Image (cartoon, rainbow, N blue to C red):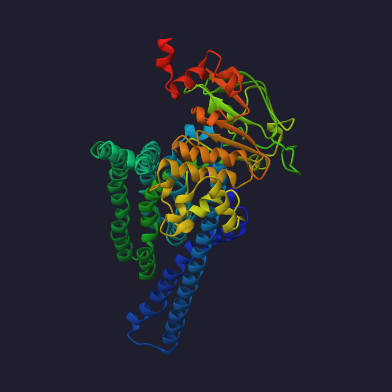
Length: 588
């Protein structure tokens, strides 16, 4: 029942209206009796005397007109109240889902990298769409129907017992068996819907991965393989869905049969009582016309229990995301920046553990304001992990990382990250214009300023696009080359005029001439900036004030290009290799 308490908590602001809607549902269920009671009164006070006397008096006619008028007025009142009730349910449920979806999306934005490594994109999309829709369906429809069913059954039972207790007991004798069947169904169907929800998540994940990696699939001609893989997930979802549906079909014939037996009981028992003179024609009409208010709730209860179990399965997944908290957050006493950072960075005996493995070991490094530091090392040495500590994509496990003399975790996250420009090795561009992608970090940039930063990153190709800088590029930069995407990402990082610029293999896909131009631009920025450049090209690193070599999570060497190129070690090996000097070395 925790799921229902959670829904109630998030209905804040709509609770009074929602309670009124719940009350109106109960009232409407009671008012259902009104039509049948008026009809029964007409039968006993107008038509029965008419049949016995064969004449219609003015009093009988006036009574009939008054009762029919009351019946019409009563029906209009019920219809109006029902409309207002349904609109209230719908309004409250839509406001609830809007708020929840916004909260979930905001919570996802605040999650750290570890969260996204543990959760699949398709699963997150399922929670934001299908699972939330199930929550809305529960609030707007299922609860209303459950109350309606319960109130109909309760009020009709009381009405029947007060009218003729023996007749009523004959009809109600079958209901315990229906409730037992419903309870059995509820226990069996819950795990089936949990499994169904997981299968849907896997299906969405498979579709999302295939769409995102469509170019890779085509490049390796693996369409048939991916279709077969999707079919496997699709078949698993179909099997789980069928199994859950068939579970209800196994129980529904028994529930429907027992429910429909009430109509037969009305005719048999009621007919016998009418013949014996125990009840009047009006009472028989009342029982016959209200029989559906007993059969329908019993028939529908299983279906609503079915929906209720689906809600519990979906709500559990939504709640898991709702309460998921990032380990990287701003402290309550976080330092707010009142001026621009100078860009001084210091690693003091920093170690980092990720997923149970030690990625960085006892890193000691000092970067002065405005300095350019290049970071090199073999693949998997920990270069990216090191620079990811600065914007707090990860937090240090041991030691301390200082920025402008203040521990990085003392800064407010938004202030810290807004002072840092990042162009990652995995370039991500939004499905937006070239202008929109460059100005993503600073939407106040003018068109001239955007073009200025584009020039720094050599985004000259933008002018040749069909609509220039207003050309909308595809999702993730589809249609652009790797080098073009890297240059747009670099312009985006520069556009925020950062105090610290982190470039992680940003120019690996551009030609040497373009790289030389970009290096010249970076060396003469119009704003003070500390630059950390992760690279593998000597042409990129040789201009740096300091070159740091990382191997197996440790700093193994540190110095200038002239110093390291003359010392035995990783940097000299790369230098000789990229300059074609290995053979000369061998000949010596």
